[in-house]
Image (cartoon, rainbow, N blue to C red):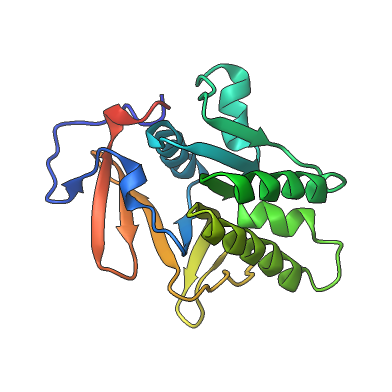
Length: 207
């Protein structure tokens, strides 16, 4: 298991038991990571904690792989979308319809994968931004949540950018930036704009 190698190291970082409590409405919750396995562990715990429907657009297929392999059980509140470039718009339409009728959490995993899938389109950056902003707009109407995961690296001159492409992150007004890190206890959830950190204990993560 990925997150079972913990020891008795103590930390002053506050333990968080339910990840639903960290989500912010009317904002894009941006989950940033450099290690995709940290993201997978975070998502597994998040979906498990959520008490509402989850619409999961899986563009890198890592989380889906754990479900298909039987490593994790498929949660009852999860609707999984695994698009190809040919059916991406069709699946986005289904997500938007669901999102407009019921309070839900929509997870776009990942922004890097969305760029890759749309790479042959003209003005791909504007198109990606339009998709995410449309999801956020519909989510606001039903008091729902939007989470966008992005694999990133930090450049002193530019800040956080997508890795390895160097594309810019979507900068939403009042957006929430959450950086995933790892320590001896588990996954550290670092709120970059609030100077606040929590830790998800390793033994609470199902991977």
